[in-house]
Length: 177
Image (cartoon, rainbow, N blue to C red; front, side, top):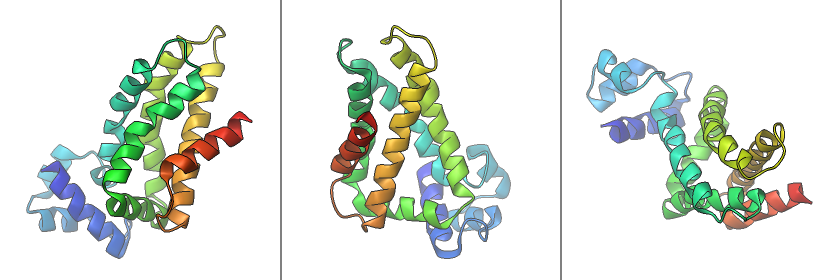
């Protein structure tokens, strides 16, 4: 049900923008009431962003599965393979999602909030591998997420051509120096 409602909302957001789409429109097209909509989703933006938050445990598991002696920066890079694999499996859907984010300014802050949930899961894992306390783990995770977002933005600007993995490798290499 959540996926179906999310698909309806994403289409409406792409057609009319997030700000011009009402919860009532989404609910009506998905065949639910406004009350039922809010049982599934906390906000209008969450209807298309819940899956972003749901990626956090997979990222954390991918990081934790990397060798404990591996450089945390490399482990973070490899953890993002979880997301780039999903994006690669459905490139048109992925491109439409990132374009929708770009066209709906109110969506971007909510998207970043969902990604902050990734950081909450990753920072303690990175901290366990570093001898120094904060701000190192937070800085590494935040920088890695910024690289991920820059790579996705570059991929969208290129109309979805090229490899997201290669763009992410280049972004992370640029920061690593």
